[in-house]
Length: 213
Image: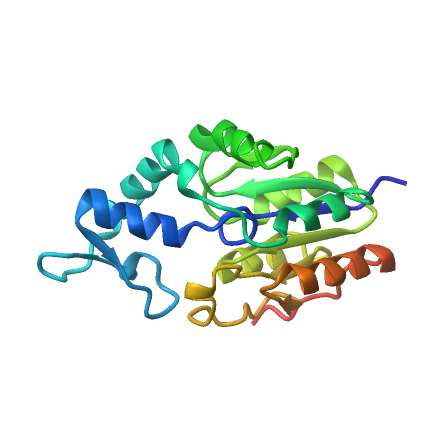
């Protein structure tokens, strides 16, 4: 039987992102990041006039951050130790929406913390890449971890047998993000999340069919 599989996001799950990103866009681009709801793009406003950035302006800023500023990011407390414990019994793949251009840098970033795992730099919904990983690896049981509700919906559609944990490890935004409707649990602390994941792996049964409404 193949080993269990854990598919995890990186930003706000393994590494802090919005806080160092906010400092950088303020210092270098005159942009304020003030997250008042779950909208990331709507949180970016010009300092001089307060007007929100256009959607087309957001990705170039994110791309610039990941290209030159990933050294500003720090570990979500307990994340790497949890990955080590989980890695004793399961394979781990990092599925991160930094895109293919930053995939290698993300792997290097995590390796510098002592965490070595395959990294897939995707874009868009994560349901299809999760489905591809399940079909490739045929795990006995699988768990998906992400901070964004839309990815849990995507995975629920494409790979409903995968357990889905909604995790937002950045306290500055955790209370702005409602629990994902299509996740099986919402936990924002690794001391608790590790136990939940290990319990799902130990049970070794598929997730229940989701209610996609």
